[in-house]
Image (tube, rainbow over all chains, first blue to last red; front, side, top):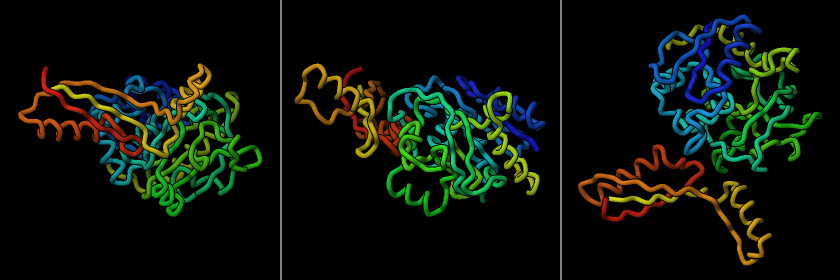
Length: 236
Length: 82
């Protein structure tokens, strides 16, 4: 399968994603530059973490108007799989591909730590290889990862089962102390209604090797690869 | 025309900056302070044939880029001059 990783000015996890996919998972990966038109036949495109456009105005606000995003929007709207991590999640929310928004962490501090996550839904390409209720351990590193959605949107997310990951404690309970940033309802990751676009604050690309402290992140990438192997590639 | 744009978080959206500022003000003895909300302020100049035309353009700018209406409200003031 073919992966694309978009580099925006200020992206800093693009190489982490590239290397994890290529070296750890043996995948074909190509970088996409933000100024280029979106071109290529991809099975999944990743918007990586970082500080695109210096986080000016709001995180992700400017990146959504990059030339590459026009084609990416079409790719996503025609069923192409898109994964946004951290700043990538913020960009997907800003662009309207995902509901809600990410605001300043409730504690005001940048958080950099390992978190436990509970898999809430498995009928998506991103979580298809996981079990409902399974716990994952992934790192977070962000200053603006507090997920917010208005009550009506939140109700829709629950009804359509779009909340894929929640912050939980080691026992799997979504407690306030397990929530690193004050996210509403302990939400760590959501997908769109069509279930082909997924955004999350934790970093699966930084947890693809036991040598780096864990490989739970690889389980998400492997789910995507398995889903893509089972289905015809959408046209870019 | 000169434009002043005020962007603030919607009611209901957590504003930890506002809360921290409020606590600091209390620490400094400004006990009468409450409901601090932190926001953004932008100034810009626009070329427009009329005031309504300028308003329509500024509203479009706010909706598209300057504010995220999922979490923010905005208002603006126009004044004549360069």
